[in-house]
Length: 130
Image (cartoon, rainbow, N blue to C red; front, top):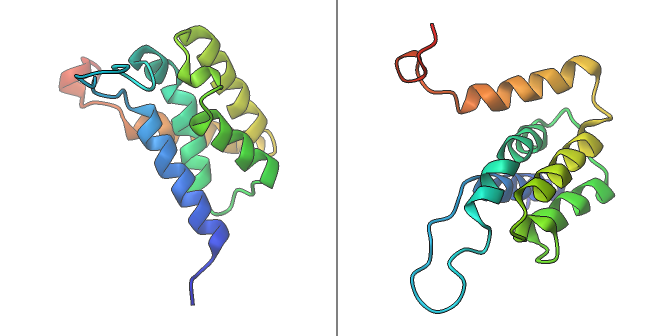
């Protein structure tokens, strides 16, 4: 009646990764301007998008500890993703990407990386490539 809860959890986590990969607009008012600093979001975006693509692919299996690690990186305020050091956050995001996607076949990781870059590539007129 309610569908597959594992698929639903994966789709929700993929949506939160998609939102996390985009820089936030600053909040004008009292308190911090950003929950996640834009430089950190930009630095972590390629790894988060690769994980997002893998989550949406139903043929890739994820263990509970892998899903927990992804969720804690994006949702836990004590992770480096919520800090100001973009380099440390990027290192943790890449480490998480490699840990999550290591069980994938050799050709699969390249497909995920290519799919994540092709998803956000501009037109040839904008990038100057042909």
